[in-house]
Length: 423
Image (cartoon, helix red, strand yellow):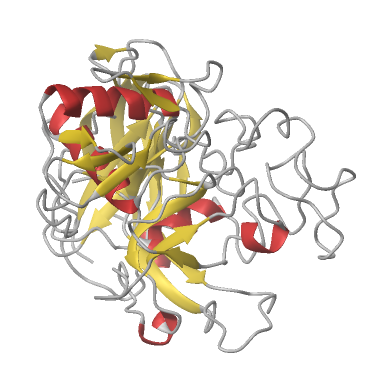
């Protein structure tokens, strides 16, 4: 095995909130990687880690054997200053058993070291890439055809994902920015549209009280009060894509959606909606063949959903809508982050609101899904929804469950979150 070449890489975690930088991003420097001169096939990876706020970080290492075109070399057998809880400091060391992960392989490799403090204002966290089995392990879906089958292996490159679902407050800020730039309008039906088009973004409070976003004629605001930190609802797929483009513009990233027709372009490196394969990998949180992001059963202590006796894995002592949040008018959403995070530090990957994904929905897509970074079907009528919501039961909150809706559809149980490529 040849010695490894090294690619120095620094990940500046997005820390944007409005126009204020609220938390310093960690900085990785002085990266080196050297294969030991003995027959052990061990590679020593060293780096320095700085964080102006002193935050502990999650550190991840990825490798490439094609000059950095892709980063899919499996780094599995590894130990040292890697994973969660890594304190800032000098001379951090990771040991990679390349002989175990790449038996018999000879070549030149590049490595990248990433760090994430999990405290950025937008809550972007690192989702390690890797191979996993996508689909239903339990045969919970008994109808035919089964859109969750066949369970199949896929490999997803590492990426960043919003820790939380996009909130009403965040979406109002986007709307006011877009309105000031003359990019949107509120038509007589009290729906927000892309200017002079039929592309609807979201409903206002005057269209339906399920929306928490009001419009005065000159600005958008939250009505009624108290829902600023709840996930935005009554938002279309187009409205989610437009928000992602706006986020990209704010941070100088490429636009992932054509601003005229909203056609996705996965080759662009900006904010976008997760592919279905990315979403399921992230929702599983590093667990293997589990029904939910935390395990195989569900209760109201873990998620905001509609509990019933219909499913043996719904073991909540309280039934119906979540008793804490089923107050006042619908929607019975919970503030983002009200429940424990999964293994990747993501909140509300089951329940609260359905989340738009990038893909077209096709019931038989799994039968022809590619192995690397499945992009979804090339066409369709519906865009994928994942995660279940406050309105639906445990069956729909499973990480394997697939649903879809027309991209111009709006409901009080549909929202979204963003992802960002590492490139």
